[in-house]
Every structure is written in structure tokens, then in C-alpha cells.
Length: 213
Image (cartoon, rainbow, N blue to C red; front, top):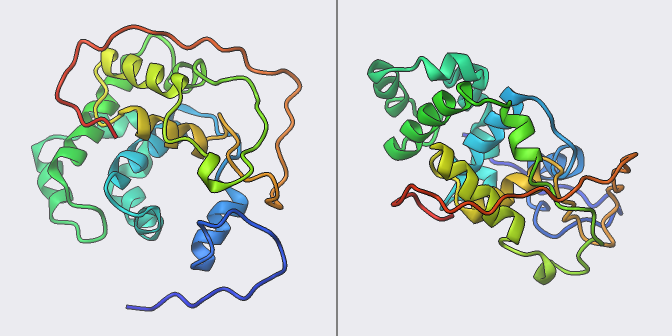
């Protein structure tokens, strides 16, 4: 197994969390916090954030190519058709996180997403908060927000699993719904022609027992 080497300092000021490897740094610079749209793309991020629960994100990044192969490119329609044979296949795949609950949740979530009256992208983005100033320090970055709590409740109400408020907020960060790059980070803030309206809902989930992470 190859060992990732420390990344030489290029003089740019960054958020403190991605400095341990080039893979992490490239994700921070090129993906994290950038606006993401598309039902399958959003489904991939939802699944990977759920698989990350209890692990470091760098573990998921290293395994992302294998995840994409194992989960048919995270195409919602394809994953929704997975059955017990696929669960067994995934549990035997050393390239991914082999957690039965998370694997079964990904398949369940694909089936729920396939039946949505609106697309998954539209549903999740309807909870986007208005723009706010970037946090000054890492301590100023929240773990959850009222919007992520509301998003998690709505996703659970519809039958999604492994989407507690913390996972929901990580999804919002990853897909550009919020910008949590620190104020002095070199990555430029994206500018939108129109500010998103706050349209988050407050229904109470009718499901119980799902992990609130």
C-alpha cells in the first residue's frame, strides 16, 4: 500500500483540515463548498456522507473510486434495483466501507429517491439558507443548523436513512449550500445572481431509530 506524502507548502492560506495529503487538499480546493446539482450527484454525496459517519473523510476519499464502481456510479435507478446478492457482494468488497446498515441504507435511499415527486436535488436545495459571512475560525463552524435539522427531519419523514442533522449539515457543506471555508481561506466564494430563499420545513419525522449523525 502506498503512503501519501506530506504536501509541500504552496503559500496559500487554507482551512486547517485538508493539509495532510494532496488528495485531501485537492478535494478542499476543487470540490468542497462548490455548488453541486444533479439527482445522481446529490445521491452520491448523501451516500458518502453517511458512509463517513464515525470515520475520517479522508478514508472515504481514498475509497471513492471503489465506491463508485461498487454502487454503479451512484445512479439512483441502478442502485434502487440492488437486491440481497448485491448486499452480499458489497459486504465482500474490501474497497469500500463494509457496514451492512450503511449499505442497506444506501439501497433504501435510492428507492426512496426514485419515487420522489420532486427530484432529490430540488428537495435538498429547498433547505438552503441565505448566504452568511464565512466563519473566522474552525471553532465558528457549526455541527448542525436549524436548516440541517429541518432537512434531516424531512428526509427521514420521506423514508431516507442515515441522514441525521450532522450528516445533513456535512452534505450542505459539501454541495455548496453553505460556504464554511474560513474567512482567510484562499478559495474564492461563489457568487450567485440570486440569493436562495429559506424554504426549510419543520415536519417531525415519523421514523425512529435512525442514527442522528
